[in-house]
Length: 340
Image 1 (cartoon, rainbow, N blue to C red):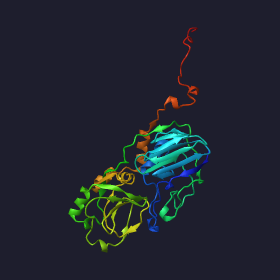
Image 2 (tube, rainbow, N blue to C red):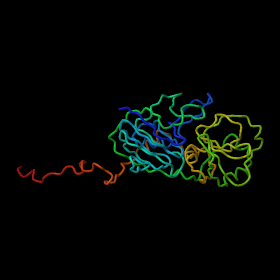
Image 3 (tube, rainbow, N blue to C red):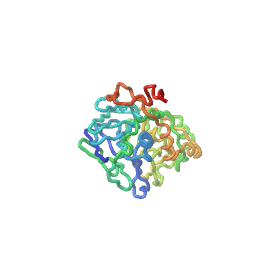
């Protein structure tokens, strides 16, 4: 049964996101979509879906939500404080959201972007092949109290709640990068200093990109004022005119003339975009062969995560209708065969 999602309150940057748009760079439109694409694949695995669907992305702060029909949900991405009618919910898991129940999601406890995904997906009208909000391009809008969104039907509403173990990608750490078209404009000494520098994720950042804070001299490239503009993609590490690095995100510009010292490999980009302010980041150049080896196609990744998901163990004290369950099967009185 299809339904509707009601937004009772929302943080400052709560939007609808999916895996983004492809083939739109020639239109001057970047991919957009979820900042943490892996979170949507994890949600699909928890819900037993064949592909990721449009979900709610929450930057830093969540909101209060309800639906008019029961549906399963998955909570993925950066852990956030979540309750269902006042009862706490585990993150990185799926849950049944009864009709009319209030799902309250508070601030992140680690990381930057949390997600709530509905089993039937959010079925707003696609634009250029995607339901993703692209704030910089004016596609869609930030969600606010009073908004109502259509939901698709839950394909398997009786599926038990699931849990998924995930590696920590919300605390920064080592980030692998590859060389790009302007890497060699930086001297070997500056490239070495870049990889030796301990960066921290700045408080300045959004879906367009995040600034890297550091101590020391800026990173300047030879002839950087004469670079011809060319294609920009998420993950590029672009320097401002005064030598400050930014890692570009899903809503980055499509072309640019500022130099780029390298690009974060797709496998590690969620770790950068999910880093909370002041989280440490250290960069390491790898070869294209190493980058290729670290890449897993999304279909294969979803298959692997579905295999890793397992039924969530519930505390019996949290099951209000416990006595209504058939806890033991196959029990007999013991004398059925006496007459044979």
